[in-house]
Every structure is written in C-alpha cells, then in structure tokens.
Image 1 (cartoon, rainbow, N blue to C red):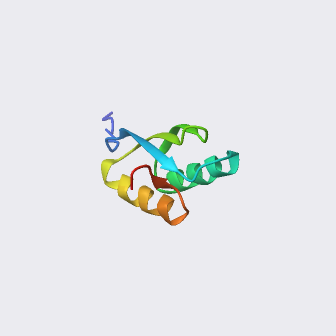
Image 2 (cartoon, rainbow, N blue to C red):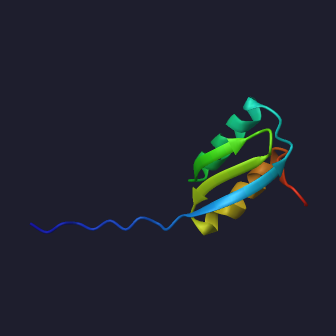
Length: 77
C-alpha cells in the first residue's frame, strides 16, 4: 500500500511588539485575528505588548494590517 505524503506549509515564528494592548480582552481580539489568518499564537502579553505567533511568511502582512485596523499597531510605527 502506498502512503500519501502531505506537505504542510512552512511556518516561521514572528515577534510583534504592539501598542494599544492593555487587557485580557485585547489579548483575545489579537488571538482571534491571528487564528482567523491561519496563525498559531504562542504568547500574548498585554503588559509588554509582545505577541509571538507562528504562520506562513506571506500571511504576516495581512495579520499586521487587520491588527492595525483594530488599533493595535507595531511599536515605532
């Protein structure tokens, strides 16, 4: 019997440092945005604004855009 090989897309860990995040509700919004765009969230910390997530490289721009539309911008922008 032949085995079918499934190739999963290559994901990379991305670190975002966001402004506008202040509470648990913010963390949940960010998690939903990331997951809706195919990312796996490893860490969200509202106190530091740090988000670590794994996703395909080509999806990170859409995630950042949607987060910015919801008021979460990268520090320094």
